[in-house]
Amino acid sequence: MSKVAHYLQEHLLGEVTASPEIRRHFSYDASILRLVPSIVVYPRNEGDVRKTARFSWQLARRGRILPITARGGGSNTSGSAIGSGILLVFTAHMNKILMLDAKKEFIVVEPGATYDKLEQILYTHGLFLPPYPGSQHYATIGGGIATNAIGEKSVKYGTTGQHVEKLRVVLANGEVIETGPLSKRELNRKLGLATFEGEVYRGIDALLEENSELIERERQRVKALRNAMGYNLFDIKSKKTFDLTPLFIGSQGTLGIITEATLEVVVHNPITSMAVLSLIDLNDLQHILPEVLKLKPSIFDMVNKAAIDLVLEINPNQLSDVLDNPKAAIHLFIEFDDPKEGDKKKALKKLQKIARKVDSTFHSTKHPEEMERYWKIRHSVGSILTQPQGQSKAVPVAEDICVPVSSLVEFLHRATEIYESNGLAAAAWGHAGDGVVRMQPMLDLGQVGDRQKLFKVSEAIYEVVKDLDGSITAAAGDGRIRAPYTAMVYSPEFYALMLKVKKIFDPYGTLNPGVKTASADEVKALMRGEYNLAHHHEHLPRS
Ligand SMILES: Cc1cc2nc3c(=O)[nH]c(=O)nc-3n(C[C@H](O)[C@H](O)[C@H](O)COP(=O)(O)OP(=O)(O)OC[C@H]3O[C@@H](n4cnc5c(N)ncnc54)[C@H](O)[C@@H]3O)c2cc1C
Image (tube, rainbow, N blue to C red):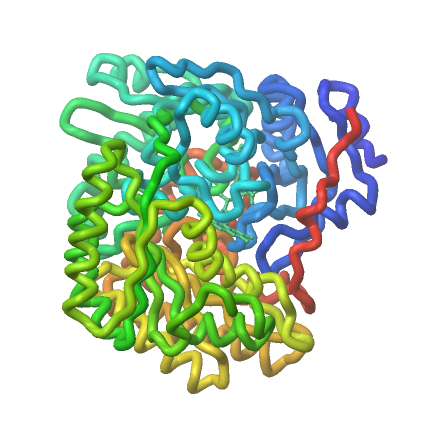
């Protein structure tokens, strides 16, 4: 064990290891990048996180940078849950639910608790946290807040960040702050603090004041409903309050380390109705989208024909008992969870009327077994993600797009052209109601040609996204892999402002450096030669 690891082990309650096997394991997240940490720490409590940050800060003041990367389930696809220094793994111990107030509908949790764990507990109280991501089995609340994760229910209930009431955060120097909306008086008190917290408040307050026009301009630039690019400078200041919470949401561990979160939860209605609407002409989606959204669906997802074709190529029998319209250009999966049975019935009726206006097939049901059969079509894209085609795998690049819903069909047409002109299947799925599109090209990262194609395709996709006023990342974050393109979508002035924000919170660059700022060359240097998700097998201390 290194000297540093020894020192940390002596001072922390949690385990510290520099074992090559464990470091190798944590050198992967769900991205196509790899970076080996020098030390892995499993913090037991906030005190361990504070001491680690303080240690790293003091080293940095003496000129030695030993960065810290917070890590939840490691399921992020943007290369942000890996780092070269100390990896703080929250899933081992700091995974507890600290409080649940079912009456007031809020929950207090440690960052390493998974969405699944929360769901199990909340369901028993008739509640849930709606923006659970598809990765809910291993994705943690800390990781979800740090990326502003979304899921199928986001169309009705918003993002993970929109459910955060307040956070406890360890700053770069080890100080702990509690975020939440501050009144003018409370803000003035913070601005007067002689601590690092005071410095942070003064820095951000001045930055917002001096750049209000630029910030407003950029707010209007991106019209996508979901946007995890850069830092959220848009929602800190309102007429009455000042709140740093939005800045930490989606900041991917680059501004502070979340040690506790208070989240608003909502009433869960497990009795739902759903419909599958399969359109022969993709263009019809644009016509019906606004009408469907008016019905306030709790899920409004899509899978296109190229994705179904790919699923059937991988496993010809997978959908034999459910798919009655394989030629449809796009299949829409629409759910209603209104508490009143009559409201759900009305919504389905209206939906059927909408379906009749276009060339489509329509099935609706409220019977759980039948619903399960229909969801099988939506969930079949899992085969694309998990089954290799020869040496090629579905790699997560440009896979987290969000465009304004009014441009969704145009995006799908243009993305299809890009994929097909590169000899790739244009399989697409996602959250139609939010304008979120997921596409993962089948590529062999061991082949130079495929590695080049990866950048060619993603750059072409990002150009289209920019053209349509969209976001290159809906929720996974820019991380490392998309960082070189954030300045392409936002203006260079706004990007420079983001670097200033980073400097205010992290003057020595100890918090997850490279994330949100990596250059294209840095990304290329970290690329894996082969892609898989093997790291999702647990690797935690036995205690
Ligand atoms: C198959 C698959 C499906 C997916 N589906 C979705 C989806 O539907 N929606 C979606 O939004 N995403 C999805 N993702 C992406 C990923 O699951 C999310 O980004 C998730 O929120 C990451 O959570 P995690 O616990 O794995 O975080 P990690 O990957 O461990 O970390 C993610 C980021 O959060 C930071 N972080 C973690 N904990 C803390 C903390 N305590 N304090 C500060 N920063 C912290 C890390 O440093 C890193 O930058 C999917 C990924 C896969 C592989």
